[in-house]
Image (cartoon, rainbow, N blue to C red):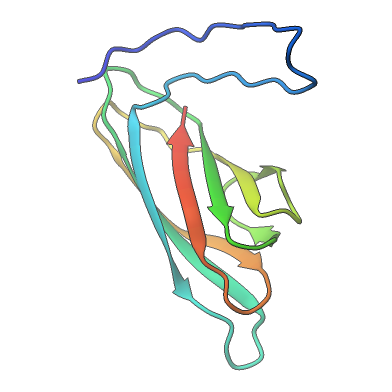
Length: 126
């Protein structure tokens, strides 16, 4: 089991912009695949995300970060898109109660994009 490390805030004059805080990093393994592509006049993609929580803590909320090979528009899924709508990387808020070894099966992420969409990365943090 991984040891939980409390997040740390670091400032640097060498960085132009941005804030990044990570909490619980590394306690989820995640995968995702497109399980429905646009067909029969429907112009959206439906995505299945699977996650495994492997930690010694319990959480009530998570952040899904998912990247694509081209820009997407968030349609629905989770408790909302927190950032990235219209770009190739989305941050989606999730609201699952997670015990230390629970699974997430999230199959209702819906996005719109041009033909040829592919998932290039996925992670879940709490």
